[in-house]
Length: 288
Image 1 (cartoon, rainbow, N blue to C red):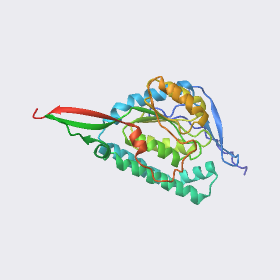
Image 2: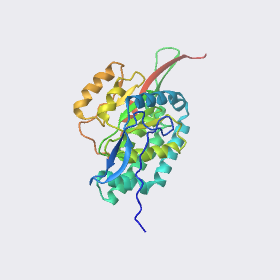
Image 3: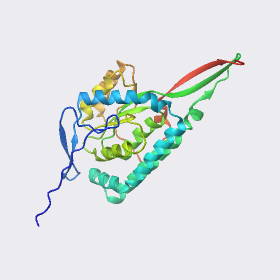
């Protein structure tokens, strides 16, 4: 019996809750750390960026208007499904990052724990980061943190899952929607995460996953008027200045990131949650 011919997968994008092909029709091969072919990934175009931003903007009202409890439940459901596909993620992380199976499993476990940690923050953000302000008059004054809007994320290039989860989960927990450009050379865990998100009760458009080169797609996201904040973690350090300049044209919030990728295994603080929140102060007269 002749040997089977393996079926080479060609993955698509994840935009608006659907899996379309790239408008450009371009794909590029994805290899493991030893140079062996794994799959083809879609090479996103400027039109794909525009479609993803439009989908994220459309989904923002529903996601930011959902109760904190509801957002937390949806994110927790994502963690449950990550757990169910733990072995697949571990295999993809091991192949992409050229690390032993045990270390890959540890990275996946930490990613799941990280997702649960941020899911638990959804109904605590207002209490911890909001305030009842003392005023010298017959008024109540409250400061309430509200989500920024659409956040563009250039995902870490080296940490294909744990780094991705560490930059995406705080955006969603704070009530924002996201357009993510995955690691260019290690996109498979991000693609599989898209499949999880599509079946985990997360409304379409809340997360939009693009594959391709951050150097090509980042400038279009930074200059896009419907993007409110930018995380340039996955951009080369020499490109970040230009991204900040483009983002300044539409007064975007640009996250300050270290030159090298941080150690994603370290426990996070509230820094990323704060970045994607805007304090709004409300005054109300007493007795009315």
